[in-house]
Image (cartoon, rainbow, N blue to C red; front, side):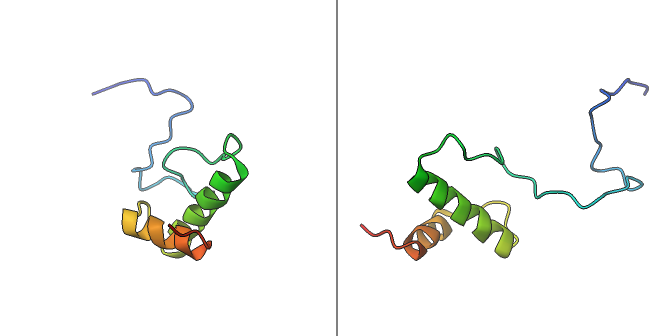
Length: 74
């Protein structure tokens, strides 16, 4: 099967692909610039948690733990 790939397409499954040190991929975006200061603090804390614990996705319980660790409470 022959097909033309977009020049910007990177096949991450290619075992011969040379990788350089890259930034962590995020589920949606790397920018939290559109968020309020409080929401940005939570987003950054969750991103930090995901990196520290090598988790791509987190549970609601983990999100709650991160928010509590920032001092928020009901």
